[in-house]
Image (cartoon, rainbow, N blue to C red; front, top):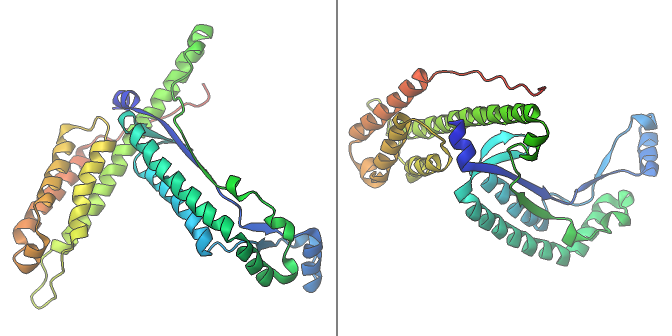
Length: 298
């Protein structure tokens, strides 16, 4: 599974830049606050919210940054801190989606620049004596950004000529990380499948006589279909057995008429998804548990 991961995936890093909304109080302000409470000045730590995080213009700037982070995390596999793995064929799509976020961010920053004086006035009214004009002397166009890169994961080939032993040690570390990433990716996908399946089964479960029948909603059904697509993009070398279980669930969900199910008997559909749930449990139970030890000192 790790070999497939190394062939099909590359590193992906997404970083963002955002103007800090808070500042520590000045030394003079800190002294005044300490005096107010008869406290030791060195024991007082205070900050000023120079820009309201909940301000609509600020929220509009946060939105594309959050969306870019969500796109990155939802369509990649965790590898190590700050680095995730993306399927090579998805790189153009990833670049395009992040580019859209950048355009949205640029528009939002433009609106923030236009409304900056109103934000300064709001801060002046809120902070009164704690207001500092210099806090707002910033280049807003340079204060916000989204960056995406695709760093190399494999050790430098030049190292192989300089020190074959060190190169092999580094290659072994990378191999171990890929093994761990592959296992963690499958475990995360199976956990997500269990959650979406359980949500659907709750809606389909038979009720006691006299109890109100639970209503099946389209979202619970669509989640199964969407997961099938998501699994296809992020699964790496998964056995045919689990692929068949996921595909069976997705195809069954595609054919569900929510309105008809809510109006009629849902027992048959419930039994079919229950069978899929049991097959998933059996697969997870039979799957061997491997413990990987990654030596980072070699």
